[in-house]
Image (cartoon, rainbow, N blue to C red; front, top):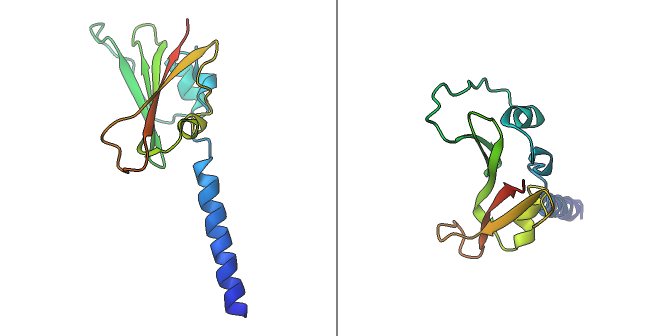
Length: 139
């Protein structure tokens, strides 16, 4: 009887953990909209020492962050330092559009930004279809 209770408790804990991890917000993207890259790094608590680009011929630069396989790519103009585009990618994908928006705490369209949810053939699971979202600030 005690073994059954332990097994049942273990199963409940595992199911609870798995269901919570799928609904987790990995990146709070809306506060990054309208910021420059230095402000975004501060918000994301980026501890890496990054230098300003020295050549004006560079048109865009990007910062990459990864948490549990979810990749945040912030593209910015190296001269003005303004964020031009944010991409959120999860190669394993999600079966529902709302799930990928949730990990970035995003709404599909607001007055500050627009989201384009993408699907790609290279998704690692045949049962998922949404594996990326591009966030573009509305100026």
